[in-house]
Amino acid sequence: MNLITVNEAKCIKCELCIKECPVAFLKMGSHGPEEIENNHCISCGHCTAICPNSAIDNKKSPLEDQIDLKDFTKLSEKQAEYFLRSRRSIRNYKTEPVSREKLTKLIDIARLAPTASNSQGISFIVVQNKQLLEQALEMTIQIIENSPLRHLVEEAIKSYREDGYDSVFRGAPNLIIATSDKNFSNGRNNAISCLTYLELFAPSLGLGSCWAGIFEHCIAIEDSPLLKLFNIPKDKKVVGAVMVGYPKYSYNRLVDRNPLDATFIE
Ligand SMILES: Cc1cc2nc3c(=O)[nH]c(=O)nc-3n(C[C@H](O)[C@H](O)[C@H](O)COP(=O)(O)O)c2cc1C
Image (cartoon, rainbow, N blue to C red; front, side, top):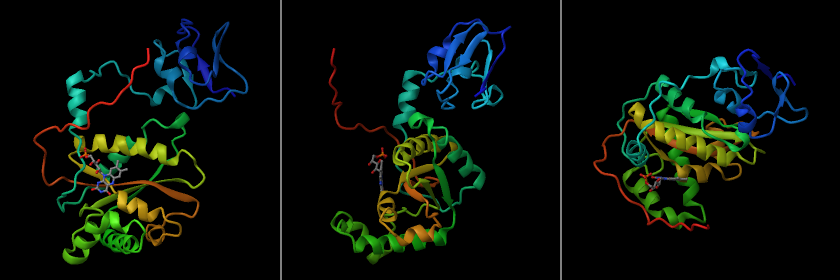
């Protein structure tokens, strides 16, 4: 396959690349690590990123594309906890549009999330067109009005029909739709991972986000008119959706959830 090259002068045969490879793609040879025939590299980059001497390179995860971590200071335990817990679902947005550049930064982090066997396979549709979102809102409401699950969202229908209130996209100026190939069994799992990265990164760009669950339900219905509205290709399925914009308000406190439910088996 010839994916890897080894700089023999730098390789100290520590075998970290071999131990770290999740798919046993490498073995130690007399001149350093070698590929094992018929095993498949999943492009995760562990072999190149772990090497203490930059001695191994891999065409599927080239060293030249990797960022040196030596100057990165890890967050403290408290910083990490507060970082994670301070992300909230945002349901009140400013009308201010978000630039394409900023939205690109946001989805570019989403693509880096962990996925099953590094399969990735998630594409993003970024909707910035307010009129299109208004059409999608009306269509979504029409679909749920005629859905057997109507009783679950009765309030959302009523507030839209009576006051024009948008409880589907919460007035957000943008919607990010995650799609995958129709027959990709890990599509939904991978999308959840990607969109979780996106949601956690959003506040660092000054942005807020919230899953658009009602919309997701309606676009997942077979032959949903929403598929056509957003030009979703026939061979793709929608595997996640979040609204994005600048938050109108900010939170003052962290909240708790249900008590921890865990079992330790020793
Ligand atoms: C899969 C999923 C679907 C969701 N759908 C909606 C939705 O349609 N509308 C909404 O306002 N919030 C939605 N949420 C946000 C949840 O209500 C929210 O995450 C939860 O109440 C916890 O609040 P927090 O995100 O602010 O911590 C959804 C969240 C997830 C994970």
